[in-house]
Amino acid sequence: MKRTLPTLFLLLLASVGYGQAYTIPFEPIGVDDRMDSAGLEQLERGNYDMILPDGTYQKGPEDANVNEGLVLITKEKDMYLVHVVYFGAARDWSAGPVTRSDDGRYFLAQTSYGNFSRGHETAGMELWIIDLRNATLAKLHTYYYSFEWTFDPETEQQLDNKTSFVTQVVLQGNELTLLNTCTEESVNVTCADPGSVYVIGNGALKRSMEYDPVHLRMVPLRYAGPIATGMLLHDVEGIHPYGSMWTDAQKDYGFEPSYQNDSGSVVTDGNDPMCFVRMREGAQADRIKDIVAISPTYIIGGVHTGNSCAELIARYPKLVLRIDPFNGWEVADVEEPPMRITFKTTEKDRVGRYTIDKATGHSVFKSIARPAAQIDLITVHSP
Image 1 (spheres, helix red, strand yellow):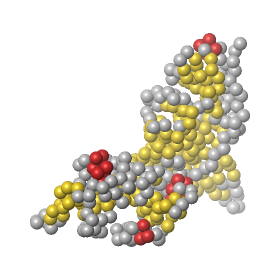
Image 2 (cartoon, one colour):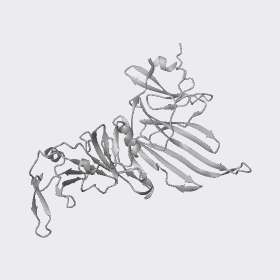
Image 3 (cartoon, one colour):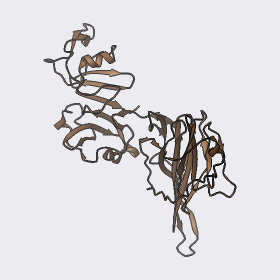
Image 4 (tube, one colour):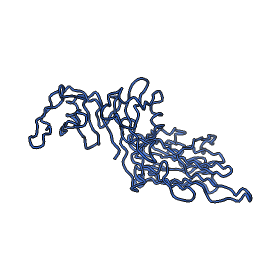
């Protein structure tokens, strides 16, 4: 007896916005059926395209409703597992082409939906990234396009487009690239989110680069725990939903004098200070420029505030301390990942031993005096 794949009744809903998530975990794709090789040969695919265990992509029937979903077949010992990725069969959804990464491991499917009203048309897009090896799925929402236009008040004829927003997507190896183009009054302008690169690894899709519209290139994001340079403030609020941002609390958390004139906020989670964020200037003043980690829960390069100097040196043995001439604290710069370690010390409790260079009058680091001293701050700067 032939087996038939289940009928789809799932409707997917999505909210539209310019920003994209920064870390999206891959989730297991459920198993809809199990069968042996004989059962696989008799399987009726119905309205679905299919990805076979060897990565072969097979199109469904010509008259199939490709909006319904995609079948993924994986092998477990002598049995075949049937997974169905449900796209959603609502009439306002449409499925785009399914593309494969050049290494054959990942597939990218696109579905989009449209909203239309007087003077405004929007299409949202869901990107479905399928890990063939692990039978897992990550889903990312973005704009596909958005147009606004005006009408002549007397003739009701449509005038030129007022604004537009278009997204292009490419999957290469384990990298997913999104590039956005925006116009206003038919003139190209910088998008609120110009573009980004996501890297697939460690069971998640993680945003690793952002597009720099000034230099026309992708630049790396730098993370401090869950927060990255380039994030919007509302992204941070989503990470710490029970926290607050205090724009006038820098001095309360020990940032004077180095940070007393900075534009930024102390981010808390409940009553616990997590980090201090400085913002960019100009058109991207709502995005994070630098992050100063306060909480030991923010792990950067394998270390956190609260680690001892001995633990730090064990991980980065070539690290050299120096005295910051601006505030008198001791700092050390790590090249990879790029970050600055700070010990908030004075002449009375130095972590390092120093000599004075007679030619310059500057302090020169010689050795560690207090290996048990704990890291106070870790700073991550935008590239």
